[in-house]
Image (cartoon, rainbow, N blue to C red; front, side, top):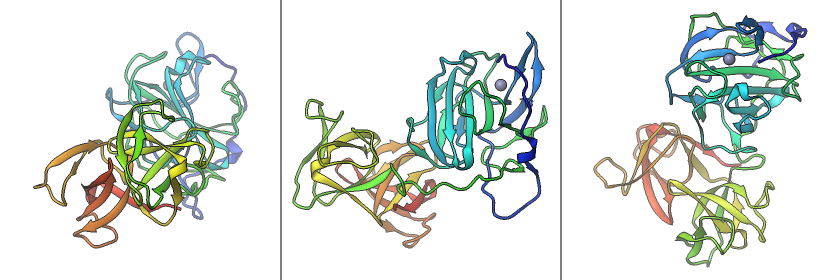
Length: 330
Ligand SMILES: [Zn+2]
């Protein structure tokens, strides 16, 4: 990437000491550091990220919670190839370049720290599979480098996904949990409704995927109008079994206080009952969210040893607790 080297905002950094409860960035993937920030590269351009060399297809996770800012081929600067950027509290943005594929979160959707947002690749200006990782602050424009933030790393060193990056980033706070603002939220089909159609798109012209009944609750991921609620006139995009589907907002309303489980592993089986002896009826992947109906074994909280009964494609199904995280939706 060609650019002019500007003054770096060193003053905004505090090196390494444990301070008052500051939120932290974590490494987005596991691998060895191919280069560090601010090095001249062959061809006379200056490199503005930390490269983490990693195998093709390995997952890239959000370094901190926030909302997806950019996701796609970055035509404004082809260097990045398939780029994901996440906007965090405190004016921070993180950039993840050269991906081979993207995670399930679209632009504007909330993402938690450690959730998969992309997969390692070598797209764009790249000579091998790696994650080009940047942390920026107050960087309104992609070509403004005046406020870049240092990522401490040593070429050849190994970093591990999910481990804290050993710096304090002033002003970085933990964003509200999913559902506190915007999507995802939990929605419940109005009592008395029977066989509400779930469709492949936001309108009656789309084909029917399945049906759900009154009282059933699902996680809504987005609305057809792009707002932060699902209006009676709009449509809500829900997590419907391993897929997503759309239901009319006229027959469902947001609900709070329900517990939602988020899948934390790459592929987890969903079964007809609470145990591996029950039939497998589907498979879910990291980041998918389901409303919890009941639990079995392991108690009502924590539940790493037990099973969760979840809403699944119009009926209930079971998923093992060791590969999900349970949170209460606001
Ligand atoms: Zn790079």
